Every structure is written in structure tokens, then in C-alpha cells.
Image (tube, rainbow, N blue to C red):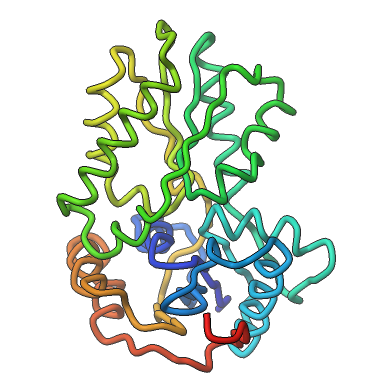
Length: 285
């Protein structure tokens, strides 16, 4: 039985791990490990000082994975997938790796092709949006640059882990919807939004509601979480993390998955952090 790791910096990738517990009767059985790559309680990848430092920390994450002898790692994180595109130029972990970037680009491209004259708003972490990787790949596929805009949403991922239904989350998303309306002030075109952070899918109803509020012709969401194919079904599941849960996250996330993925909910309820999961040697940050 193959061993598959789903990796994210935080808990957003659990949305993708949950797909391993679907109704696909022909899927290959696997042992599924969720590997939380968040390096420190006070420092995520977006707070690291440089792209080189991000690459070095992600290399350490991969080195930590080796103790589990995985057959495949799925990077269920937009930021980390972009970091890996740079990292693989000088480092290879020794097992197969696939990221979410291509799945996201293909989903956005297909939507824009089916809706001529429409525009795509890329929503993600600050570093994801500033990287420009999605816009560049869409332009390479022939999408006109003026049809693509980006909006960074710093801090939202952590809020979503603590409580996807909180007033703070709803306020932030409403604020981002208002900012998005300013980006498309000329109006007239159909607008689609791509959730290019795995955490953002926890609040899909809120995104739909708030963007429908500000855009008369809102086309809907492109959620890459639904597009990263696996072909596997989890026979076993475990959760691994270097850090403890952020306040409220254990309770909110276990409740979120209780109905449709009870294996994930049970693992979160009993999970303990392992400070030795991988090295993180960036001083006191």
C-alpha cells in the first residue's frame, strides 16, 4: 500500500485530504499522512525574510518527510507550490512531488475560455499574489493580461483555521469584496474569483455572498481544492505537525470535518505536536 503525504503550511490542505474519503470505489488504497509544514508558532512561510529562506525551510520540511518514506507528496498549498517551483532547481527530495499550481491554472483557464470577455480575480496570500505566477501562466496560455487581477489577503488563513464562521472572517471577506469592486471599477464584465489559498475554501459561502453583493454579474468561484486529482482512497490517516494548534483551531476544524470526514476529525482531536518533525533553525523567529 502506497504512502501519500498531503502537505500544507497550516490546516487548509485538510480540504484536499478530505477528498481521500470520498465514494470512489475504484481508487487505490493508501496510507495518508497530513504534514503541517508551518515552521514556528510565530513565523509562517510568508514571514520569512527572503525567497531563498523560504526555499531552505521547505527543503528542511522535505527532509523531515523522509522519515515516513512517502511514495508521493501532494503540496496542497499555493504558496508552497510556488516555493517548490524555485526549490526544485537546486534540490530534489527523492520521492514524487506534485503541487496545486497547475491544477489552479487549468481551472482558471478553462473558466475564462468558456466565458469570453469575463475577468478573473486571483485571491491568495500576499506572497502568492505578489509572485505573479498565476497571471504569468495564464498569459502564457493566451489569456489577455487585462482579464486578470490579483488581491492579497494577509492574515485571513489563520483566522479561518480558528473559526471559519467567525464575525472577523466575515468582516475581512466583506472588506476584500469591497476592494475587489474598486479593482474592477469600470464594470461591465462577468467576474470570477479563484481561491488560491487552500484555507479560503472553508468560507466558500461567505465569498459567494459578499462578491455577489458587490458584482452585479458575479460568475462564481474557482476552487483549486476541487481540482487536485489523486486517484487514491485513504485506508489509514494520521496528522503530523511541528507546532500546536492556533487558539480555537483544533475545535473548529474537528467540528468542520466531523460529518463528512470523521477520520480527520478524530485525528485532530487527539493530535499532539512534534517539535522534532523537521528542522527550523532561523534563530528566535
